Length: 134
Image (cartoon, rainbow, N blue to C red):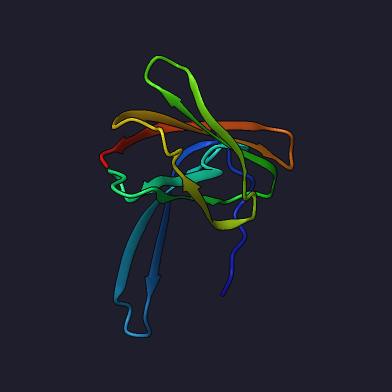
């Protein structure tokens, strides 16, 4: 049997189900679900591999759970100087973008930022760190 839930407000909700068998034995189960606001959690699992970067090429990977129209990756020094900016995949689901570190990039820590524009018009941004150790 299927039961459609009513529209739920964003937040955490508990769903409870109690059922009986033909011998009047009962069982109860509960599940907590989180209803996200639009655009919330649309960009998940962002990471760079391998980290630390020991050679010249690595990959940014991330998952988009909502349709997107544009994605852009930027790499910065810790002082905020732009090292490189490139377009990225904006496909629904798993995405992987190859990144070739500039030949003159010094060893150290760098910040990367992924900016995504969803089809709904919402804009998302996530940041993390890359270690370069060549």
